[in-house]
Image (cartoon, rainbow, N blue to C red):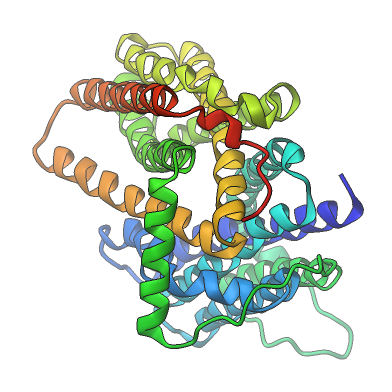
Length: 420
C-alpha cells in the first residue's frame, strides 16, 4: 500500500470514531431532555435515512471533485451537525445533519480506493477499512461513554486554556468539544489525501436528470453478472448486521440475564470477530477468489440459530466472535468485488452511492420487520430462528443465482477487467 492509502485510513478512522462517540453523546442529551424512550432508536433512523434519500446525488458530488476534497467538505458538514447541539438544536435534527455528511462522505471514502489502488489490492484495502471501522466503532462507543461519565465531564470542565475562554459550561458541551476536536483531526488528515488524477465527465446538476442517471447506474449494477451477486450479498449483510445488534441485546436480556450496560459489551465482542474475519480475508482471499467465500454466509445463518441453546456468558462470547469472524471474512471480498465492478462499469462515486442505497434500505427494512416482530411479542428464540433461516436461505439463493450465471457465461473472467 502507498502512503496516500494510509492517510485515507487515518482520516476514516478519526471521522468514524467521532461519529460513534457523538451517537452516545446524543443519547445522553435526549436523556437529559427527558425525551420519550422511542426517540433513542430514531437517532439511527435519522442518520441512515440520508444514505437512502441522497443516494442519487452524493455519487455525482463525489465524482465532481477530487475525492480528498469531497471527504474534507463532508467532514466539515459533520462538524456543523455536531456544533448544532451546542445551540440547543434537537439531537435528532443535529444527528440527521451528521448523517447527511456521512452519506456524502461514503462514496468518496470507498471510491478513492479504486482510483488509488489496482484491482488485486482491493480485498486487502477493504480488510483494512472494515477492520479499522470496527475498531473505531468500539473505541468511539467507549469514548462516548467516558465523555458522558460525570467524573470525566467534571475533569473536562475544570480544565481551562490560558487566556482563551471557550464558553463550555455543561457536561454535554464538554463532551461535544472533544468530539468536534476529533472531527478536526480527521479534517487535517483529509487535507493530506493526494489527488489521484482520476477525472470524470462533467457531472449533471439537474435533480431530475441526477435521479434518472442514478436509476441507470442502479440497473447497470443489478444486471451485471458479478455486480448483482456481490450487491445482493453486501445488501443482506448490512441489513442483517444492523438487526443482529438489537437481537443480541434482547437475547442477552432474556437468555443470559444481563443488564443493558453489560449486554452492550456483547456488541463489542461481535465487532472484534468482524475485525478478525476482515483481516483474515485481506490476508488470504485474492479478488479472483472472492466468490468462493459465499458458503460462509450460509454457515453464519446456521450458527446464529445456535444462540437459542446458549445460556452461558463465556459461550456467548465465543459464539459471537465466531459469527462476527464469518461475517467479516465473507463480506470483505464481496465488498471489494462490488467496488471493482462498479468502477469498471460506471464510476467510483456512482457505484458506491448505489451500494449505499441498497444496503441502507436493507437496514431500514429489516429493522422495521424486527420492530414488528417485537410488537407482536414473538419470543426472542423464534426471532433468532427466523433470522438465521432468512440469512442462510438468502445466501443459498445468491449461490444458486451465481451458479446459473456461470452456466450461461464465465462471469469470473470479468474479474480484473479494465474500465469500460
